[in-house]
Image (cartoon, rainbow, N blue to C red; front, side, top):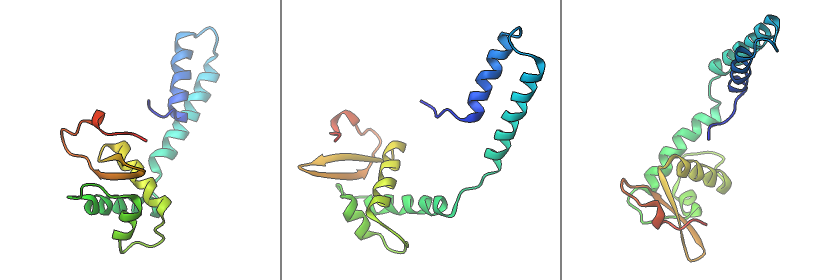
Amino acid sequence: MEKMTNVKALEAVLAYAEAHTDAFTREVVEKVEAIKDSYARKSSSRKPTKRQEANVTLKESILDVLAGKGGLTATQVLEALTGFEDLTLPRITAQLTALKKEGAVVRFVDGKKALFKVAEDGTDVTDVEEA
């Protein structure tokens, strides 16, 4: 499910307004269109923060650390990473979770440990135990 943004919400209102012209005046429709355009301009001109840019590099490094390994814990990934400032276990876990949602990493449980490994083409996610 896609995130409902302000622009998408206003587009839905405008679509409804077009279908029900008797309930909305032209002034209301024009105002909603102006608000939608304002939100669209703000979101298109926004550039990533320094942390977001650093996270892209961090994700690439995490994938490099996990490459060829059978599975590592978040702590092992943290210990293997160097060259980053302010690395914490919660930050590593957040990036591993993001990589999992993107399909680049698979999470599985071995005993009581949650392990991560690089997702391979053909990996059957039904065989991977979720915790």
